[in-house]
Length: 282
Ligand SMILES: [Zn+2]
Image (cartoon, rainbow, N blue to C red):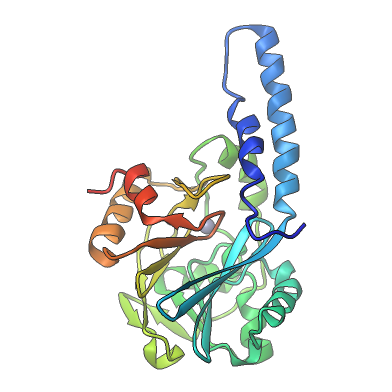
């Protein structure tokens, strides 16, 4: 399936998942279990969707390529382009084909900036490094995870996280090494030709990184988009929820206060307004 707005069709489906809350009556419970199963089936169908979408703002273009509900973003300005995230290792051939269709020559990418070393974000990075000599930029805290290619412990924050936990926890890829480490704030201009910054925001993982470019913000799994629509939501996995809220506050008020739109790892994009409202950013 291909469409410009993959999450639109998801809203009704998400309703099925959300309706699976515990109730007192047995028949209601059976109905809820059925609704949950239907929701799961539909959700797993959603996971197979692929899409490509573009946003342009002030000469900066963000092209979002989605496979298995995971976003890879191309940040492009003129002839310069870099990847933010790289998807699952199993999807690299599809990602490469989509990049070429979007007019991006993988060999000319200036970098792959990895938001964090989970398999769905970092799994494809090694391919671009070894095949096209594209340097990999990684948050320093995720060096060992990226080296092993195994997800560190995931903590579900809700129903979908609990359901997905076993499969996502088992995520693996061939480990690799990064070329540039983000230890604080890294100016990306020299490496990529684009006036962007990569900033270390440990939380979802020890080496999680966000990127600011103009008034656009790319956050990996700091939070996610709502399933359907353009709202913000807490990510499916977060081990310290309070720290996560503090981090989101810091990013939206100190690191990138001018943000208008946020590109997330899953679903989205998300308006800055909805992030401020959902996470009570002050
Ligand atoms: Zn993650």
